[in-house]
Length: 182
Image (tube, rainbow, N blue to C red; front, side, top):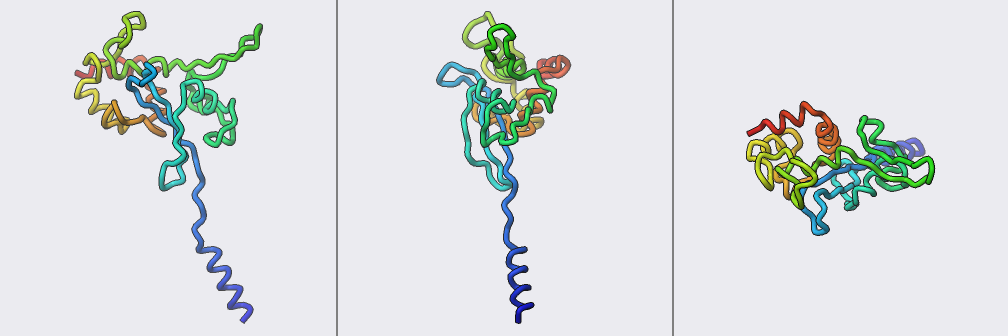
């Protein structure tokens, strides 16, 4: 009887669903925002079944959380995702004033995916889009096939596609290829 009870308890305990490890999923959307920004950063927690705990982030918050500088449920181990992926993103501390400033070189180019020219003035340069306010149909098809972004107005570059686009916009050959899509 004791062995049967022990076996029954072991069976129930071992067959119980163990929670999936939770991991952070970062993303970005390239569209004009209410605050006149051109990008919206987002973070979710992925438990293996759903994305939850969505948090909209400013670029500064994104850099500080993903670099591990700030403690967060989205980066509890305080990993530096940028160093791991060789991205030119991080936090610079001025040696004289000790003031910290964030920098995100690829983030400064994300608007170019969508616009032919900087939408608020002509000072900030030329974009990579072949249409004035959105990518051409073939560029949008490319973004969908490569990054799973069906609609540039509504969809986020998420998870591995997010890190991939941040890396790709730093690559001059990728930029030339994207601009060359009719």
